[in-house]
Length: 51
Image 1 (cartoon, rainbow, N blue to C red):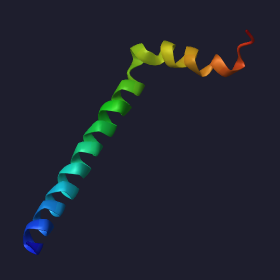
Image 2 (cartoon, helix red, strand yellow; image 1 turned 45 degrees about the vertical axis):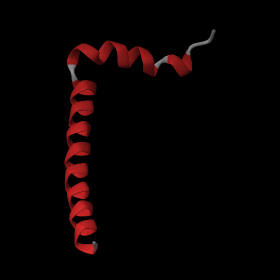
Image 3 (cartoon, rainbow, N blue to C red; image 1 turned 180 degrees about the horizontal axis):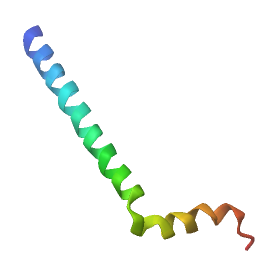
């Protein structure tokens, strides 16, 4: 049983790391995409608006 747990834990660690690295890359690409700049610039000014 201990070998099975170690195998599953190793699998989860490796593939979980890859999953989150890919997810991070997708989010980073979305944020850096030139067409999204206007939306992020507008959102960055929200705290300074006086309603």
